[in-house]
Length: 595
Image 1 (cartoon, rainbow, N blue to C red):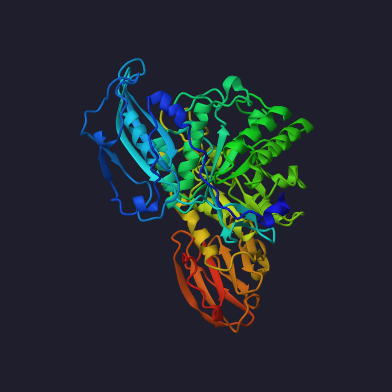
Image 2 (cartoon, rainbow, N blue to C red):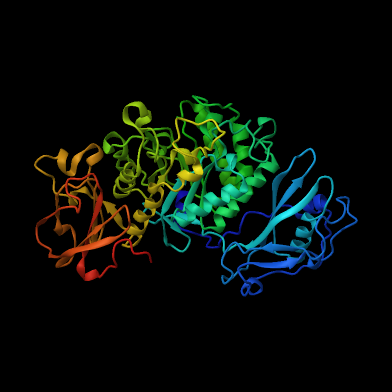
C-alpha cells in the first residue's frame, strides 16, 4: 500500500461524509418529499451574511402529520447563516443544522440538535419546516443554519522521497495536530464547533480524536446519551452515536481540518491500565475496521491505530493487523495509516515492515529534555525502510512535567515549543501539540485526570497553542520537500555540552539538501558559531526568527567564508530563537511569510 500511495493513481477529490438518512427524517418529522431544486454556487453567491425566510414560505408543512400542528405561527422568521463565506463557489450538498428546544415533559427543557445534508432545496425547506412542527413534546426551533461544504479535502500521500506527506497535487502537507482524544465522546455540537473553529484559526491541520474513547468511552455516554457500541460489541455500532461522530468529522473537514482518527483507545485491546474492557478479537477487529472504513471512505482523515498501549503478544499484534486490514478493505486505501504507540516508543518498533503503516509515529513522552526523549525522532528518521516520522504525543502544555508535579511542576509554552523545533529539525514531517485540559475536555463537574489547570474552553487559549503555527509558516516559507536534518551546521564548542548542548539546552539544525538555506534552533540565549559553507552562494543573508511571535528580523548579509558567531537577541536568557541562513541570491521572502 505504501508504494501505491507514493504514486497517486486517483487524483479525484473526496466528497464529504455520506448524508444522513432523509427517509428517517421523513418518518420522524412527517415530511413528504417534493420536487428537487439543486443548489449550486450561483444560488448562494450573492446571499447576505445572514438572511431569513418566513416559515410560511417553506413549502408544504404537514400540519396533519402525527407530530401535530405547527409550533411556530406563519410569518415567524427562521434565521439562516452561511457557515463559510458566501462568495465562495459551492457545488456540494447543503447542510441544514437545526437546533430545537424540547419543552416540557419527560425530557425536560433542553436543547437538542439535528442535522442532515442534501443538495435538494425542497427537502431542506421541508425538513426545517418539520423541525418547527409541534407535538408531544413540542419542538421549537431556536436556530437553524445551512452551509454548502467547500470542496472536499485533498487525498494525502507519502512523498516520493518517503520523508514527507503531500496532497494529491504534490503540494506539501504539514501535519500540525492538536490532541483532542475526548472530542467525540465529551463535547456537544456547539462546544465541538467552538473548539474546531479555534484550532482552524490557529493554523492546525489535523485533530487527533478517539472513537472508542479512553475515559470509559464504552460505558459513559456522550452528551446526547449515546454509547458507541450496542452491548459493547464492536460488530454492533450504535448509529445514533456515530451520527455525532459524522457531524464532527464533517464540521472539521469544512474548516480544512483532517481528523487523525483512532478507531479505539488501546485499553480496548490491551488493558494494561485504564478502564477497558478489552472487547476486541482478531475477528471483530477486522469487521469493525471494515465498517469504519466504509463509513468514512470519503472523509478527510488519517487512520491512527494503537492508542497508547504496548504490543506485548501475538494476539494483540493480530488484532491490530486485522483492524488495519479491515480499514483498508473498507476505504479501499483512501487514507494514510499509522499507529500511536505507548510512551517512549515508536510505531516502527512494533511494526517495522508493515505495508499498512504509511508513516511512523512516536510518543516521545511528557518530559522537557531532548536527551533520551526527543532525540529518538532522529533514530526513527534513520530507520529502514524509510518512512516519514512525527511525534504524535510530546509534552503537553500545562502537563505535570515527567508526571511529577510535586517535584517538577507543570509545563509552560516554552516547554512545548522546544520539542516542536527539536522534532522538526531532526527530520519530522510534522508535529502534535497537546494541552493537558484539552485532551480530556475537562470542565467543572467532571473528574479531573492528573490535575488539569483550567477548563478546556479556557485552555484552548494558552499561548503554546497559538505558537505552534509559527513553525509551520517558517518551514513552508522555504523549499520544503528536500529538507534534511543536519546538526553539522553548528560548530561544536570546546565544551560540547554547551553547544550543541544537552537536556533542555540542545541546539539542532536543518537545511535543504541543495544548500539554499539552513535553520538553527537555539533553545536559550547562548552564543554559538555556524559553518557558513553549508550554504550555497557567495553571500549569506541571516535572520532571527522569533518562535513566540512568528516575526523575523534581518541580521545582515555576510560573505560566505568560514565560520561566523551569532548571539541571540536575549543573551543569557532562557528564550528561544531560530537563526535563518539564506543563500542571498535566492531572494527568499522573510522567514515565516505565509504564501
